[in-house]
Length: 232
Image (cartoon, rainbow, N blue to C red):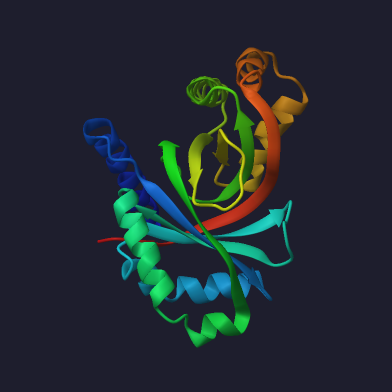
């Protein structure tokens, strides 16, 4: 697992460098499922890494929604691809192949989605807070969130902000962003939230700048995520 985590960080850094050098934006595909037992679903996927490798993914894993569920048994599998072409090709392959009987027995597919990575991250999957927001200035929000991330890290919080642009996700509002706070453990996430609830002075100015770019909050969840696959 340590090797996989280290590799994922390397993948994301490499993809970010590729984006800077060649305008090649990494894309995440998500397969949302409803599982009778989300933990059993995670276990089955973890034992079958070929569900990611055969699609050409660079890395893959699962998330289970802990709060803010849109439906009971909410979980999903995610795959990171080096660009949109690879992600779309993988999605086409996924749609054409039969789903395993083992997965069908414990879960059903609700929807599939794409997300372009606008702000890369290096922390591994773990305990994550997820927002979907509508913003009035995408570039301004990314800049403000990056500044807030910096002061959080300077004040002892080992967290990172990942920012994604939804694509092909069905009905959605313009200028919607999908944002993840990577905190690795519940304890780290809790300490960070506590500082904001206590209105820590160091957080107020950058937090206010970020809020000024947000028009509405559309989704707020906590998720438990884990990586199961990394390309060799």
